[in-house]
Image 1 (tube, rainbow, N blue to C red):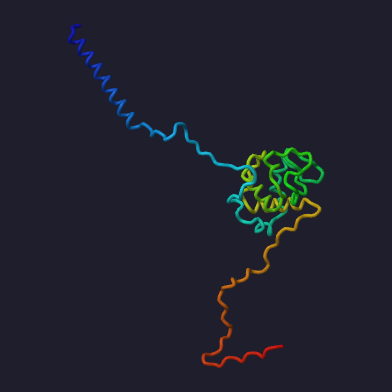
Image 2 (cartoon, rainbow, N blue to C red):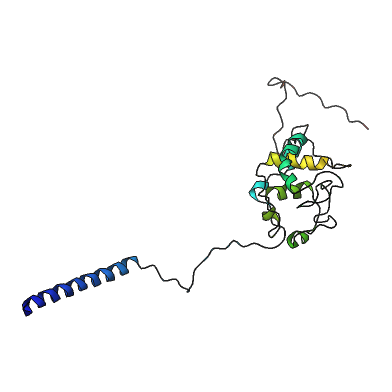
Length: 213
């Protein structure tokens, strides 16, 4: 093989290398991601503060609106899923979770001998209807760090039924709210209603009654 053929082969190899280098440079310029202002990776983290959290969307409407028509019988059926971890009858003691007999009105994290999570021990107050509603909706949203793994009941009617059932598990149940028997009163600035039989046009006004002493 003479030198001319060798030069042709070397030239072809050199040209190929130059083309590959140009393609590499062009692709790097097109697909290079923007350089962050600060080195490292940005990770979005939801801020959680210890203790009780505000009500979520699932608990915005007052539970009293649903308790007025709650069904103890249906609540007992829904609460069967809780029987895996809780006892419902008096003096049966705790299981994985504390017993739920007489829980309505009981101080939070107060069952003697039960090892509550540190997060729940830090919550003050009692298990009112409202607090039970928040807890049943999402325990970990109400008390971040709780050991309770229950996912929650998103249906307000189901929560009201369960609360009514828990309230019945007591020698002295807390009275449930009652449905409003009368319609709401008209606003103070509402216009007065027209009389049923208005006097004819041009008629003299009726005399005012004499004042009483």
